[in-house]
Image (cartoon, rainbow, N blue to C red):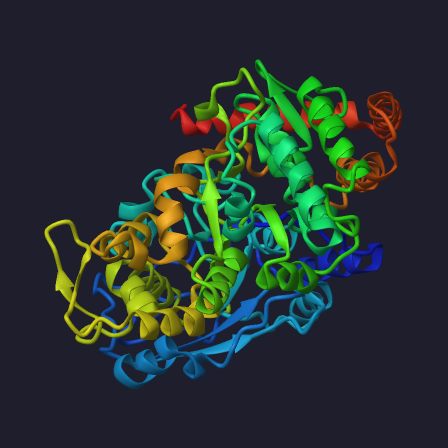
Length: 563
């Protein structure tokens, strides 16, 4: 699961500008929201003088047959796109397949950037951002997005690898979103990384239950004092790391309950208050106790990610937990073992409260829809060619290019299952470099395909030579992540009354969460703080938000059931 982010609400003036600009530049939905598919080879989908789309032929677009140029905008404040051909994949595609993409970044202010593009009616060809982002949803409602339905059978990779696309469809029943990192199999990295050297120096004790963990953290503090941090959560201010501990106290408890897109606990057919949930309360009494006894980093709620990384990299952390601890722990393991073969990190099966079934504890979550999406706007001269490229990019050839480089180097051809055949020239160091440099242009990754492809190579190696992350993904993290696809898209429009309530409740939760952990001197204090939080949340309209989300949740479940 990605780390939780607090959504940025548009100020009233920006909302007004968006609505006004869309009304002025958008045609009717029936006229422009579903243009006919085009033929890429002759550009017949270009707008004619009267603004209407020409009919498209049945000719299929082929990668490399004709030049393909389009603009791609990243609708994120903190994700900057690189120059296309500065990446290995972009360079190869430009030189060998005539694909050139103009990468556009938001420059740290996505709301202002989008407002300016809409007001000037100068939209990019493709927008890459959050699924069902309010800004792109407004574009859809104004008829400014291209529906993909007519392309799905013609270019079948998305349909083949994604399977059921119903959860991605808009209210009008059409598909406008091309997902990134979608999957039909468990995925994710949440869990616990353990400092190997410290663990062995303490006698390699049993580390399975919350009682075991508490005893272990106390031993760390007693032996190492302030030189070692017993428990380091990754970005506690966003509930990361500590949220992993929450899941240890309930079979089927999900990390997503703490996410601002849910902030609720499913019980029966309803979503109920997180503040009154017994599992949430018990977990936080445990966490507050750890904090009081200085077994948790005392600056957990105000440190930066770089500060967390420095601690892990230096080996000054005994237990590191988070939504994706593998990123830092893998890098730290490599660095530490170079200096000392007995150092490094390893991962453990998720911690559970005594008496619970350890196989029903899920420290992390994943969704079949992945993390974000690409949408094609009506500004695109040849939307079919763009979709066809995205479909190729998400297929086996595109994914292997991104992860292993061009065919003929580290891989050549496919086996009977469609996985790449790795060559004798496979260079693990070069592959790691390729993946790192291509990371920011992995705009429509296919987890269903690439994870088994990566694992094919890793499983052919002795354990000690396997990629650190791949080893623990296959044995620990992937089997212990929970599918929460049914809980997506539960947010009201941000500028609606319920949207304002949602933001207010989110702010309340984040404030209460930190205060509860830092200030509680007893279990009674935790109950008192959460009792007040529940009362305050209800005054904000939390009950109405829960009703709204319950209704959306039930609709999601019906879609997933094919109803």
